[in-house]
Length: 196
Image (tube, rainbow, N blue to C red):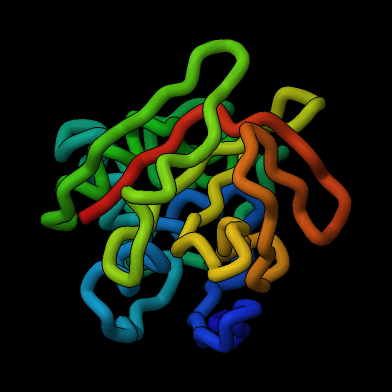
């Protein structure tokens, strides 16, 4: 589901609210691609997830996924193997890694400058963010789980404008090594994929 939300400077964004728990990476690719290309793209989440999966793991493993239809947008992880041998398994059992998302972004024709902070993390390089230069960000929650969000730009107040697919909202946070969702989760930024 796509929602419209705005930042403190009045800029309006299309924010993809994910429907599957582990589809934040796919939603973040879609939002980042829209920002770079400055357009709306009407793709259904599962079709994009399958395209990302095929571009990440290649035709060999994708051929194992025998589904003829696009499948549902949500899978019950308890009924699928905990592996990435099919797109359904990957989405249902934890989603994608930062490296897989980087590969998929490159496959979408985007230039990616990856920044993997050291153990202490690093703040954003705000000069790398702009209207057509977002970043896909991997946050590691305190419990060890991960979550992808998009850093769209730096606001006139110095905050980083994030598009968060978990709740489908814009979230402005200070430029630090941490991210806190509007829903209460907080974690360390462990990878930043700057796009152009």
